[in-house]
Amino acid sequence: MEPVSNQSIRSGFTILEVLVSISIAMILVGIGVGFSFQTLSIEKKISRISGKIEVAVRNAQMSAAIDRKDIYLTLYENSVRGSRGAIDLGTARLSIRHPGRFEKWKRPPRKGYTWKFDSNGLSDPVAIKLGFDEGEMTMHFDPLTGEVKDRSMTIAK
Image (cartoon, rainbow, N blue to C red; front, side, top):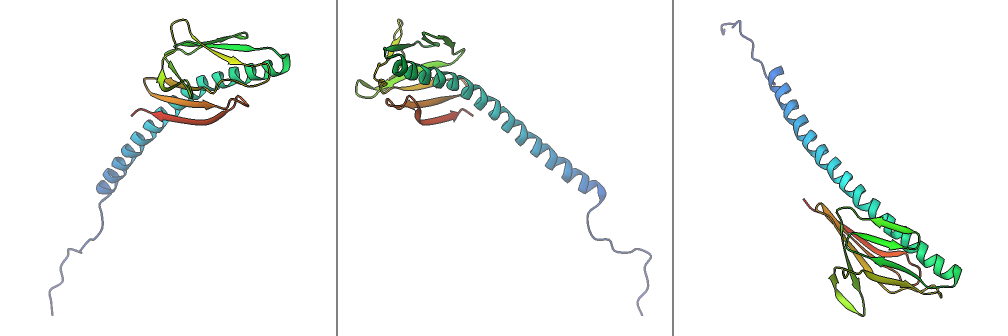
């Protein structure tokens, strides 16, 4: 017969080990959530300014067709101006590309790039890139509708 010991064999984790594991997991989750909230606020900022430009383009396109007169938007590096006012782009830097005339992205000239919306409802095919420190938004506008036909957003990490 074997002698009986007063010590029982324990298996499993101690409460301290479990608490340390949970703490490490919570820290990692907190870091991940912080990064995603930061990315969401950057996306919101970029989308807000690009949305204002989209509205100005659609308004210019509709006004040209309804009023049967040419409407112009002037694109500057930090603003977009039209007959209904100006859009301040803040820290964003605007670049344009005009398929058929120039294929590379260019900053608008100092006097601005004049984007014409014809009285027949057509406009020049223009692409706009908004550059921010945190990322960029590219929008390609349809010359028939004034709608954005292709859009891409890149967030810098």
